[in-house]
Image (cartoon, rainbow, N blue to C red):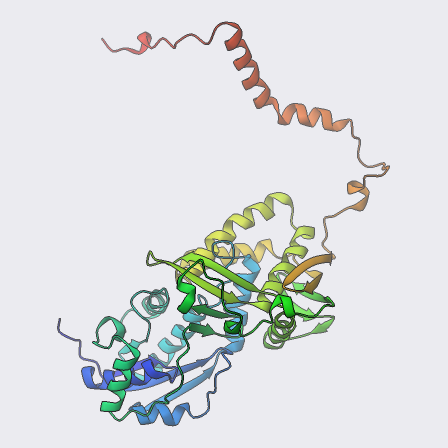
Length: 420
């Protein structure tokens, strides 16, 4: 297949072995200028020195973008507000990180006059879809180059040899047996012994959380404030998104909260096992549920749960920039208008328990709910309600009883409907 002519390409760049090789590979195979873009999403990696490394690899320039605030406000918190959880457990830490990176790549490509974008995702994972759907949604005129679907490099040794042949400086560091992705919301672990779903994860693998067995013997109580479904405070102190999530990560991690071990269904049709650590996010989800219990009527809350599942699929499948996701957000904005208040949780040895909640919009009425004597609820009214609510069940049972008494219902006669 003939390669398209590319003048300038924006590359999602981490500074690791693969993306360092990609810089040189793009120049060699497409004869184009390469501009690197590194997103700071709170991954905790050292970002200093990346410019020199990118330039030494052959890039013309590099953008190092602090996207943590945008990431939390515009991607993480809307997903949290929706209550979206993929396949019952995954809090989507990697999934919504890709569209924010890809969006910024498109913006840089347009500002720089680039005609292509590139990423280092493999052809077996979800991330290639998430990046490329964002590119298509925001600027379909950009050519997408995915080296892992084109080049002959198939291993770390191949990549090292390629870098050596092209005089690309790479650090010879010990390779982790796990594939990891980290940002301010979570860290994921895949590969190694995790590829056997029967094997228990090694304790040494965990990065953000203490083992629940070794966590403090004293529980810790937290009060988390929400405004319209968005977290805004911790223990009575108003905090911005970065500070709030960072503090909850530290507290939750210390108590071993937020570990998930699951086998999930990838978008590409493969089942994969992932282990996730999301301490702060786990606390926030539990706390938000406490406020919703008070302020949402039953019908609304139950329907929100249905929408949440669809929202999670949209995020996981990389369909962030779609009309449906925007419509779901608009719906959630209306549903969560009364979701303001304070939830109290207890974190202890890997658990996060909801122990209290209060809200100025609470629908909970103690005078209605009490098991003691009250003057607002006539229990005799329940008989009429039950009679009406169970009427269809009663009619069906009566029909069945009549049928049994007559030796079964007669076979229907369809002769009147036969055509001449």
